[in-house]
Image (cartoon, rainbow, N blue to C red; front, top):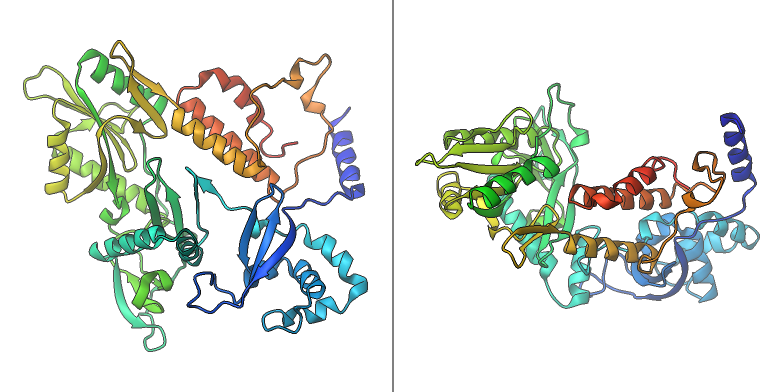
Length: 465
């Protein structure tokens, strides 16, 4: 079968197919009306309860849900007699065209990406934005996300990241400054710590001419060599640490500003100039942080190990008996020294870095470390694999199978001429690519036994079946 024949068959098959991909199953209920003081207020007077394919039911703001799904909302409002209520009247015009309603409903089934089930990380639901974070805090009867956001923005102002130019209604932005947007990224660490990061939309800034990337130590080669030399050969102490707010240590010369949102508290609506320090997301700040920290290491007598591993830094000990080593992976540091705590004290007192999670190596870059009965340092992937299983269960509603068979063992199987259906472009492809990305990092962390399988599946990640 020729390539053209394969493509023609797929085009004809897709055009003739009547299958419709659902992301949500149905609207099962609603709540409201809610005012801004209600713990269930999510930016809309009403919330709808949406059942998804995996059986989960989530509350979604009506104003958000109706943007992509006006027809299901109109059908639900008509069936439940809600069309005369404030907030639901907008669906009257859609609901009165009964003849076209079903056709419109079929089309609406394809547009539910924004209301797909929420991402779960280490057992916690991850918010999409600040309003959602506030809602989750009310729902869980705590203030974890709000406290974390408050701490993050207090640190931004502590580092003089912004220069407040007053409210947008009363003042104009300075000449020559370009406005950009920003958004918040929420995450949970392996130990349950909540994280919030303010990220600038750097694609709205001018494209830099020079390289903007920050180099990192390679996990398979650089970090393993470092661990072997230091722990097994020189019996030095291995510690890890995380440098907090690293980009706030890098300076910017770009003339940009943002308009503060509700997460800024009393400064909502103010013009905030990114005056001096960097934010995640801006194009050149990875390189600027890399150069900033490299200057600190050079000042302490460290030099890059070699051109192959420029982010593995070494320095001979004072007695000449061994070398100290530091492996740099952006803001994650692995240190091998006789007294790593003394060096960390230098970073905090002399260079004013804020360090987190400092201590003997137990978890680093997604990999667990422990010593076996013989005292040998062992790398294993318990927490990372558990996170992968949790993410798989969130995607598909069930745990992955433990017993599998490969279609490649079947006689006469040729995946290159496989004519099964392609995955749709409204989520399934992204799920496939996400799983492949997780597996690729698992290989990098040491699961060499799945290398061939992952490489084979990776070759189909652009247009998977």
